[in-house]
Image 1 (cartoon, each protein chain N blue to C red):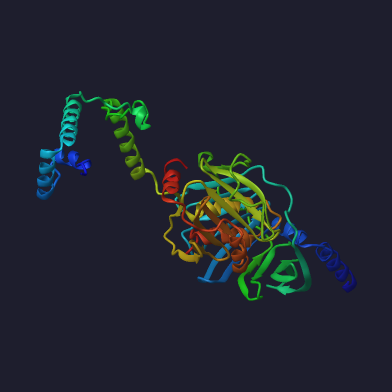
Image 2 (cartoon, rainbow over the protein chains, first blue to last red):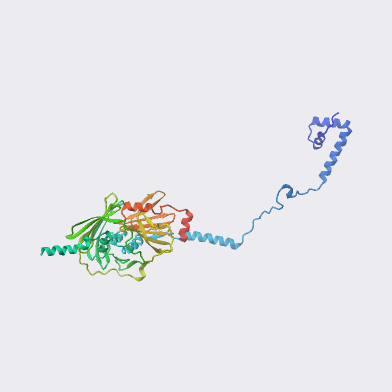
Length: 139
Length: 312
């Protein structure tokens, strides 16, 4: 006569089909050993369920002992004000700053004419062209 | 009497005929005293540029006036240039502590041809750069004044012809534009500046001097012994304010803005190293070669441009 074995545990968990449940019930009526085994299993389960829940230590799971999760901190008013002022400065400065150095042709031809007058190659042609090129003498 | 005249002329001509190189002609021309009218005509890639000028040479300085303009005049000499406006205002630029000497001597005289021009005894010389004729210059024998200058491109086409159409060897007493001490822009030599954008030498043009132009800019002067240009480098972006038409010249990753005048060209562009502007009297083919040796045009990143705008 084969005993119920693993079917007992499934029987307690209510996991058996109706046919299996009938077979287990028929067997338990005639088998003292399986009845005792069923009683032991039921007692053990009750004992386990009566134990308090204990938190598993992090070290058992291979995790750091303590995980610090930074909570959003409230920024100081002055930090916010400074950031806002900097942003305003950048925007205003970008608007007001000139779009580069403005040059006129004279700004470049005048130094050329002054410097070239020190050269041995200083001729009327050189210096006259300086001004003509700038439009000063243009019609 | 004839023999005396011959020897007298020979004695007069001797200092010029024995002039050994170009610098002798140019140095004598720079101190010539005369007055006359000059017409300048230049064929540039952007069209013909011309001008009519009245020129007086006296005491080592030149006074130039435009009879067709608004009456402005300028005086240049000894490192100073003053421009007098029709309203009497004067704006001056003074260069101090420049490099002495002629700079590089790349040019040689290939021929010296005697002749006459405007009824004057003249000598015409052909000036070569590395064996290529780049100019033909006609000098008055008596005064040393330059009466005509024809500048050639590399293919020997004429770029500019500046010729006196009247000439008087007696210079009048002229009043050079005065100067308002408060309006003088003094350019002092400096070494205390980032010169990465200003090469020591480019296409035979040697950087002779550099001057602090303003707090964020430096101006360098280059010469190859005949042609010359100034190159301005600014840490800030540079833009040109003018009523003249600008030509946009594409150059690979960026572009130049260009203005041609009668005998001069002005380029302005933005580079990775900052704003740059070049002004000089180079013929177009030399301009192209020089520009190829300078920082190429290109737009820096937005952040760099923004930073330069604010802080230079």
